[in-house]
Image: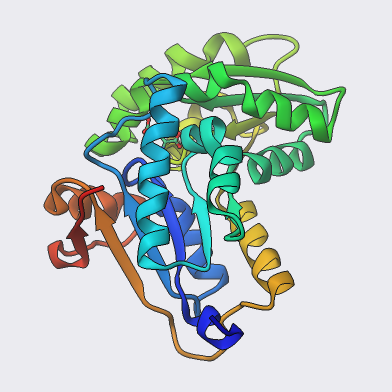
Length: 275
Ligand code: DGL
Protein backbone atom coordinates (compact mmCIF):
# COMPACT_ATOMS: atom_id res chain seq x y z
CA UNK A 1 0.00 0.00 0.00
CA UNK A 2 1.26 3.50 -0.68
CA UNK A 3 1.62 6.06 2.08
CA UNK A 4 -1.60 7.99 1.47
CA UNK A 5 -3.67 4.78 1.62
CA UNK A 6 -1.91 3.81 4.78
CA UNK A 7 -2.73 7.11 6.49
CA UNK A 8 -6.42 6.40 5.98
CA UNK A 9 -6.24 3.00 7.69
CA UNK A 10 -7.54 2.97 11.26
CA UNK A 11 -5.48 2.57 14.41
CA UNK A 12 -6.55 -0.78 15.88
CA UNK A 13 -7.16 -0.53 19.60
CA UNK A 14 -7.61 -3.72 21.55
CA UNK A 15 -8.74 -4.55 25.09
CA UNK A 16 -10.25 -7.51 26.90
CA UNK A 17 -13.46 -5.50 27.27
CA UNK A 18 -14.53 -1.90 27.77
CA UNK A 19 -11.57 -0.66 29.85
CA UNK A 20 -9.51 0.23 26.79
CA UNK A 21 -12.13 2.83 25.88
CA UNK A 22 -10.34 5.09 28.41
CA UNK A 23 -7.28 4.82 26.14
CA UNK A 24 -9.35 5.29 22.96
CA UNK A 25 -10.74 8.47 24.51
CA UNK A 26 -7.24 9.86 25.08
CA UNK A 27 -6.15 8.95 21.52
CA UNK A 28 -9.31 10.49 20.02
CA UNK A 29 -8.76 13.70 21.96
CA UNK A 30 -5.07 14.05 20.97
CA UNK A 31 -5.54 12.83 17.37
CA UNK A 32 -9.13 13.63 16.36
CA UNK A 33 -8.52 13.08 12.63
CA UNK A 34 -7.41 9.45 13.06
CA UNK A 35 -9.80 6.63 12.15
CA UNK A 36 -10.11 4.36 15.19
CA UNK A 37 -11.17 0.71 15.23
CA UNK A 38 -11.75 -0.72 18.71
CA UNK A 39 -12.11 -4.39 19.60
CA UNK A 40 -13.28 -5.46 23.07
CA UNK A 41 -12.99 -9.20 23.67
CA UNK A 42 -15.91 -9.28 26.11
CA UNK A 43 -16.59 -12.98 25.44
CA UNK A 44 -13.31 -13.84 27.18
CA UNK A 45 -13.22 -11.07 29.81
CA UNK A 46 -11.67 -10.96 32.37
CA UNK A 47 -8.12 -11.64 31.22
CA UNK A 48 -6.68 -10.45 34.53
CA UNK A 49 -7.31 -13.63 36.51
CA UNK A 50 -6.12 -16.01 33.79
CA UNK A 51 -2.74 -17.60 33.20
CA UNK A 52 -0.11 -16.12 30.92
CA UNK A 53 -0.41 -18.68 28.09
CA UNK A 54 -4.17 -18.22 27.90
CA UNK A 55 -3.81 -14.44 27.81
CA UNK A 56 -1.21 -14.68 25.02
CA UNK A 57 -3.48 -16.99 23.01
CA UNK A 58 -6.55 -14.74 23.37
CA UNK A 59 -4.55 -11.61 22.62
CA UNK A 60 -3.07 -13.09 19.42
CA UNK A 61 -6.58 -13.97 18.22
CA UNK A 62 -7.99 -10.53 18.94
CA UNK A 63 -5.06 -8.61 17.48
CA UNK A 64 -5.12 -10.94 14.46
CA UNK A 65 -8.73 -9.96 13.82
CA UNK A 66 -7.82 -6.27 13.70
CA UNK A 67 -4.86 -6.95 11.40
CA UNK A 68 -7.10 -9.03 9.11
CA UNK A 69 -9.57 -6.12 8.83
CA UNK A 70 -6.65 -3.76 8.18
CA UNK A 71 -4.96 -1.36 10.61
CA UNK A 72 -1.85 0.82 10.36
CA UNK A 73 -0.94 0.37 14.02
CA UNK A 74 -2.02 -1.80 16.95
CA UNK A 75 -2.50 -0.34 20.42
CA UNK A 76 -2.82 -2.91 23.18
CA UNK A 77 -5.07 -0.84 25.45
CA UNK A 78 -5.04 -3.48 28.19
CA UNK A 79 -2.37 -3.73 30.85
CA UNK A 80 -2.89 -7.46 31.30
CA UNK A 81 -2.49 -8.20 27.58
CA UNK A 82 0.48 -5.80 27.27
CA UNK A 83 2.16 -7.40 30.24
CA UNK A 84 1.74 -10.95 28.93
CA UNK A 85 1.97 -10.57 25.18
CA UNK A 86 3.54 -7.33 23.87
CA UNK A 87 6.80 -8.84 22.53
CA UNK A 88 4.90 -11.79 21.02
CA UNK A 89 2.52 -9.42 19.21
CA UNK A 90 5.37 -7.21 17.96
CA UNK A 91 7.08 -10.25 16.48
CA UNK A 92 3.92 -11.82 15.06
CA UNK A 93 2.57 -8.70 13.34
CA UNK A 94 5.78 -6.96 12.21
CA UNK A 95 6.12 -4.60 10.38
CA UNK A 96 2.85 -3.22 11.85
CA UNK A 97 3.89 -1.19 14.90
CA UNK A 98 2.43 -2.55 18.16
CA UNK A 99 2.30 -0.24 21.18
CA UNK A 100 1.33 -1.16 24.73
CA UNK A 101 0.27 0.76 27.83
CA UNK A 102 2.90 -0.40 30.36
CA UNK A 103 5.90 1.62 29.10
CA UNK A 104 3.90 4.88 28.90
CA UNK A 105 2.34 4.26 32.35
CA UNK A 106 5.74 3.58 33.92
CA UNK A 107 7.11 6.77 32.34
CA UNK A 108 4.20 8.86 33.66
CA UNK A 109 4.68 7.42 37.17
CA UNK A 110 8.44 8.04 37.18
CA UNK A 111 7.87 11.63 36.08
CA UNK A 112 5.28 12.17 38.81
CA UNK A 113 7.16 10.63 41.74
CA UNK A 114 9.48 12.77 43.85
CA UNK A 115 10.27 10.27 46.62
CA UNK A 116 10.87 7.34 44.24
CA UNK A 117 8.21 5.13 45.80
CA UNK A 118 5.43 4.18 43.39
CA UNK A 119 2.36 2.07 44.14
CA UNK A 120 0.94 0.15 41.17
CA UNK A 121 -2.55 -1.30 41.25
CA UNK A 122 -3.45 -3.75 38.50
CA UNK A 123 -4.96 -7.16 37.80
CA UNK A 124 -3.48 -10.29 39.32
CA UNK A 125 -1.85 -11.32 36.01
CA UNK A 126 -0.23 -7.90 35.53
CA UNK A 127 1.14 -7.85 39.09
CA UNK A 128 2.41 -11.44 38.90
CA UNK A 129 4.05 -10.86 35.49
CA UNK A 130 6.14 -8.06 37.01
CA UNK A 131 6.02 -5.93 33.83
CA UNK A 132 5.48 -2.64 35.69
CA UNK A 133 8.24 -3.39 38.18
CA UNK A 134 10.62 -4.04 35.26
CA UNK A 135 9.51 -1.02 33.25
CA UNK A 136 9.86 1.34 36.23
CA UNK A 137 13.22 -0.17 37.13
CA UNK A 138 14.45 0.43 33.57
CA UNK A 139 13.60 4.15 33.83
CA UNK A 140 14.58 4.75 37.46
CA UNK A 141 16.65 1.87 38.85
CA UNK A 142 16.48 3.32 42.37
CA UNK A 143 12.68 3.39 42.50
CA UNK A 144 10.73 1.30 44.96
CA UNK A 145 7.58 -0.32 43.56
CA UNK A 146 4.75 -1.64 45.69
CA UNK A 147 2.35 -3.58 43.47
CA UNK A 148 -1.06 -4.81 44.48
CA UNK A 149 -3.64 -6.87 42.59
CA UNK A 150 -7.10 -5.28 42.93
CA UNK A 151 -9.24 -7.92 41.26
CA UNK A 152 -12.64 -6.75 42.51
CA UNK A 153 -12.27 -3.30 40.97
CA UNK A 154 -12.82 -4.68 37.46
CA UNK A 155 -16.32 -5.93 38.36
CA UNK A 156 -17.14 -2.84 40.40
CA UNK A 157 -16.24 -0.59 37.47
CA UNK A 158 -18.42 -2.57 35.08
CA UNK A 159 -21.28 -2.46 37.57
CA UNK A 160 -20.90 1.32 37.69
CA UNK A 161 -20.13 1.30 41.43
CA UNK A 162 -17.14 3.59 41.27
CA UNK A 163 -18.26 6.11 43.88
CA UNK A 164 -19.97 5.90 47.26
CA UNK A 165 -19.42 3.82 50.40
CA UNK A 166 -18.95 0.42 48.73
CA UNK A 167 -16.27 1.61 46.31
CA UNK A 168 -14.50 3.50 49.12
CA UNK A 169 -14.57 0.47 51.43
CA UNK A 170 -13.14 -1.84 48.77
CA UNK A 171 -10.42 0.65 47.84
CA UNK A 172 -9.54 1.14 51.51
CA UNK A 173 -9.31 -2.63 52.01
CA UNK A 174 -6.82 -2.86 49.13
CA UNK A 175 -4.81 0.31 49.81
CA UNK A 176 -4.91 1.43 53.46
CA UNK A 177 -1.87 -0.52 54.62
CA UNK A 178 0.21 0.82 51.71
CA UNK A 179 -0.73 4.45 52.22
CA UNK A 180 -0.95 4.55 56.03
CA UNK A 181 2.75 3.97 56.41
CA UNK A 182 5.63 6.34 57.20
CA UNK A 183 7.32 5.30 53.93
CA UNK A 184 4.16 5.56 51.84
CA UNK A 185 4.41 5.99 48.06
CA UNK A 186 3.83 9.53 46.77
CA UNK A 187 2.44 8.23 43.46
CA UNK A 188 -0.32 5.78 42.63
CA UNK A 189 -0.17 4.30 39.13
CA UNK A 190 -3.45 2.92 37.77
CA UNK A 191 -2.13 -0.16 35.97
CA UNK A 192 -5.47 -1.34 34.65
CA UNK A 193 -7.62 0.45 32.09
CA UNK A 194 -10.70 0.01 34.30
CA UNK A 195 -9.29 2.00 37.19
CA UNK A 196 -9.43 5.64 35.99
CA UNK A 197 -13.18 5.46 36.76
CA UNK A 198 -12.32 5.36 40.48
CA UNK A 199 -10.43 8.65 40.43
CA UNK A 200 -12.74 10.52 42.83
CA UNK A 201 -12.98 7.63 45.28
CA UNK A 202 -9.24 7.00 45.12
CA UNK A 203 -8.62 10.64 46.03
CA UNK A 204 -10.62 10.16 49.22
CA UNK A 205 -8.72 6.98 50.12
CA UNK A 206 -5.12 7.93 49.30
CA UNK A 207 -5.34 11.64 50.17
CA UNK A 208 -4.90 14.88 48.25
CA UNK A 209 -1.09 14.80 48.31
CA UNK A 210 -0.72 11.46 46.48
CA UNK A 211 -0.26 11.84 42.72
CA UNK A 212 -2.53 9.56 40.72
CA UNK A 213 -1.43 8.72 37.17
CA UNK A 214 -2.65 6.40 34.43
CA UNK A 215 -1.38 5.23 31.05
CA UNK A 216 -4.01 6.74 28.76
CA UNK A 217 -2.59 10.15 27.89
CA UNK A 218 1.05 8.95 27.85
CA UNK A 219 0.01 6.13 25.49
CA UNK A 220 -1.76 8.62 23.21
CA UNK A 221 1.45 10.69 23.08
CA UNK A 222 3.43 7.59 22.08
CA UNK A 223 0.90 6.82 19.35
CA UNK A 224 1.20 10.35 17.94
CA UNK A 225 5.00 10.27 18.05
CA UNK A 226 5.24 6.90 16.35
CA UNK A 227 2.75 7.73 13.58
CA UNK A 228 4.64 10.95 12.95
CA UNK A 229 8.00 9.13 12.77
CA UNK A 230 6.50 6.67 10.28
CA UNK A 231 4.94 9.47 8.22
CA UNK A 232 1.45 7.99 8.54
CA UNK A 233 -0.42 10.56 10.67
CA UNK A 234 -3.83 11.33 9.20
CA UNK A 235 -3.96 15.06 8.67
CA UNK A 236 -7.02 17.11 7.89
CA UNK A 237 -9.73 18.93 9.71
CA UNK A 238 -12.57 16.45 9.83
CA UNK A 239 -12.98 13.95 12.68
CA UNK A 240 -12.06 10.36 11.89
CA UNK A 241 -14.37 7.36 12.08
CA UNK A 242 -14.81 5.47 15.36
CA UNK A 243 -15.87 1.85 14.95
CA UNK A 244 -16.45 -0.62 17.77
CA UNK A 245 -16.33 -4.40 17.64
CA UNK A 246 -17.18 -6.75 20.49
CA UNK A 247 -17.06 -10.53 20.77
CA UNK A 248 -20.18 -10.77 22.94
CA UNK A 249 -23.39 -8.89 23.65
CA UNK A 250 -23.15 -5.49 21.91
CA UNK A 251 -26.02 -4.23 24.08
CA UNK A 252 -24.01 -4.67 27.28
CA UNK A 253 -20.78 -3.47 25.62
CA UNK A 254 -22.36 -0.16 24.61
CA UNK A 255 -24.31 0.31 27.85
CA UNK A 256 -21.29 -0.29 30.10
CA UNK A 257 -18.87 1.22 27.56
CA UNK A 258 -20.49 4.62 27.99
CA UNK A 259 -19.08 4.85 31.55
CA UNK A 260 -15.56 4.34 30.20
CA UNK A 261 -15.91 6.61 27.20
CA UNK A 262 -17.54 9.34 29.28
CA UNK A 263 -20.40 9.70 26.77
CA UNK A 264 -23.39 7.42 26.23
CA UNK A 265 -23.10 4.90 23.41
CA UNK A 266 -26.07 3.46 21.57
CA UNK A 267 -26.59 -0.19 20.79
CA UNK A 268 -25.93 0.09 17.06
CA UNK A 269 -22.50 1.66 17.58
CA UNK A 270 -20.99 -1.79 18.26
CA UNK A 271 -20.84 -4.78 15.92
CA UNK A 272 -20.57 -8.39 17.03
CA UNK A 273 -17.53 -10.31 15.69
CA UNK A 274 -16.22 -13.82 16.21
CA UNK A 275 -12.50 -14.53 16.60
N1 DGL B 1 -8.43 -4.19 30.83
C1 DGL B 1 -7.66 -5.06 31.68
C2 DGL B 1 -6.37 -4.37 32.13
O1 DGL B 1 -6.12 -3.27 31.78
C3 DGL B 1 -8.43 -5.48 32.92
C4 DGL B 1 -9.67 -6.29 32.65
C5 DGL B 1 -9.44 -7.79 32.57
O2 DGL B 1 -9.10 -8.41 33.60
O3 DGL B 1 -9.62 -8.31 31.49
O4 DGL B 1 -5.56 -4.96 32.80
